[in-house]
Image 1 (cartoon, rainbow over the protein chains, first blue to last red):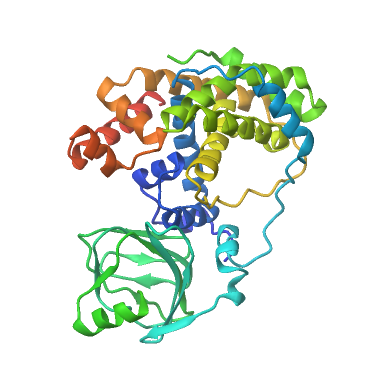
Image 2 (tube, each protein chain N blue to C red):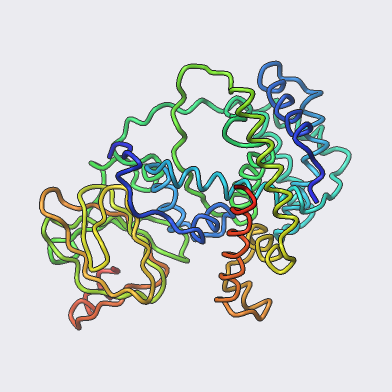
Length: 218
Length: 183
């Protein structure tokens, strides 16, 4: 999962998602997908920089409220107790660094659980307004046909998948909403590993997976 | 309107460099005098109580001191950088949530940021501030609410009575205008 050449990434975060990530209003699960994509994508990192600049100017224009007389002294006291931040070092892990804490280790430490059809997942712990999981889809396998009640973000970390809309390779993020019914198929070659976040349960179109959904929390 | 110009923006860069290189408390006090009340106002507009906002301001300014070495004036203006610190502290202290951050770009050999690059960036940020101030009132208000950050789009829709589609298209128009004025 090396940093992908940005010309290889064809599917990016949308403006509303980047703006909400910049504003800090995305659910944690979506923020994790955004942070991971930006770790791989120079273009979205630069776009985030622009949205942060908008945020900075909104803040500068939001008026000023006097701080107490002791505020500066209290801050200097805090400074004397702290230590300077270390400089970032190049990443040595396979997974992009935002994921490491959530997985509790690197790719080899992922606790995969089978959910049927050869597909495995690990649900990552976040605030409850949305959920995020790692999915491993064996090469050549299809994820059951499903629709979405809310928004689903799917970021490819290894391999690739295709659905009716396009091909998604490493670093690509698919933003799916209620209008999209899709049946992603992992390409032949390597297993496809994705980071997928939803703010509502997926809606499977066949009866059986819907039953499975209740048990498997997919 | 923003109360700044490219010259004072470059002065802030110099103050952060003084903090970084010499732990200069006077330069820090100048930054504090300018930014602390603005950060406090921003946090209160985000729904924080004055007490919590003030505690958060102390955290933000402490982070500024501790991370001064990581500030790159060729990549962000001081106001942008302080906003990102304030936003993260707001999520952490006020909303009590975690925020996953992109991995930092690894640092190459020590390089002093190119002065002209920093100058261009400060000017561009200044221009962005003006463009934002000149947006039609209805568009600007929605951008501001989005960044004050206490409300999602659907919550803004509930409060303002505007349909979600209208909010989204107004924000899109606002971004188009900002992009156009930055060309």
